[in-house]
Image (cartoon, rainbow, N blue to C red; front, side, top):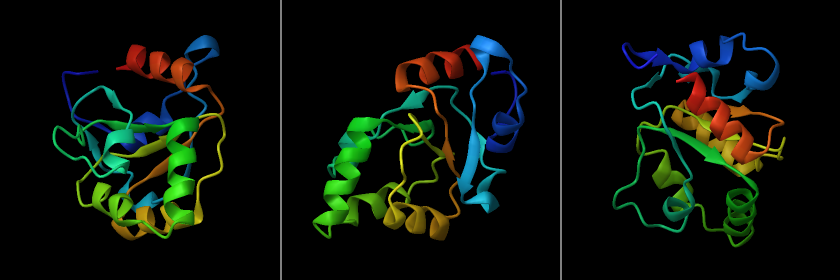
Amino acid sequence: MTDKDFTVLQLLDLELKGHNSLNLRCLHGRRGLSRIISIPDINRPGLALSGFFESFAYQRVQVFGRGEVAYLNKLIKDGNTDSIRQIFDYKIPCCIFTHSLEIPEAFSNIAEEAGCPVLSTDLESSDFSSRLLRTF
């Protein structure tokens, strides 16, 4: 699929079966479903969440697993959403939360304001990542 632009909506609409299924559903930011995934790869945004944006791979799908969500919750609890807001200053294609993790409301609100799709899957991070990379 790397020979043409691929949208988040097309990713969401893929009908993959069995061990290839991504089990994705859109929870927030539907108006951004037309965003292009220009680099068929993933990024784990832990460094960006900590405020380090040098070499931030914003053109990639951003995957949030248990570690990223634990850190998100800490940032929000501490009232520090600056780095979360900064992530959305970049036009990232979408954010995908694995393990059916609960998405913090503050994160959802910021993503919605930015028009960035927030998707969820019940798959573990490593399983989801390998399936997604096979899809691309």
